[in-house]
Image (cartoon, helix red, strand yellow):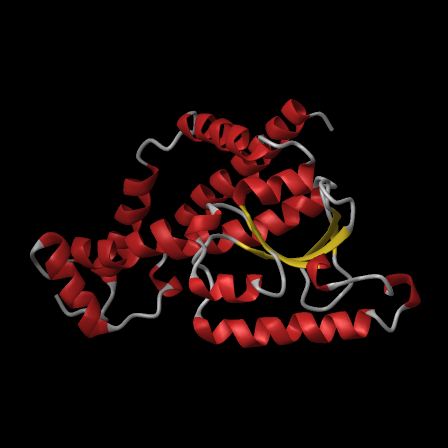
Length: 237
């Protein structure tokens, strides 16, 4: 697929499968009180911080804002990106346990087994050793397959969707000593073969976002949650 066509296809995918789906799930799921595990002490404090009083509206904001602006979109983003690569035939789902996708690196033309991560700070120190062991175990197992006899450490990579090399956390840098951590522009170049694909994609996605109809959607969901809180016996207003 040509560069412009691929960018348009990905932008459309983001619009339908990530952005609009997030809006839909926000209104259908996150405006329901039953979808929350509530710490009654902390939520009262957060209500006071947000609206300077303990009130149904304050409770709703304390629950709704972090869910909608943080957890839900970040979770769906990572999951959907992996599916997108496979559904758009940009990569294959990996048959090797622990790897997310497989693709032909458009720079060195070698097949890469890739574990996907969203951004440059998305792993913790305790994630490093298990991830490195998973790579080592996978390579040792793969080398028993005659078809994969020529593989090496650099064929097993971490692909980071966005960011710059300079932004990688020390945990990623530790992994990078043995297995390449490919991030942002370089990752998209290796995946698509187009050197400037990543900045062009970001620009196109900004345009897509600007054209989304988001009028009152945030307020509507929060108002629905406020109504449920008002009727609940949990809070004792």
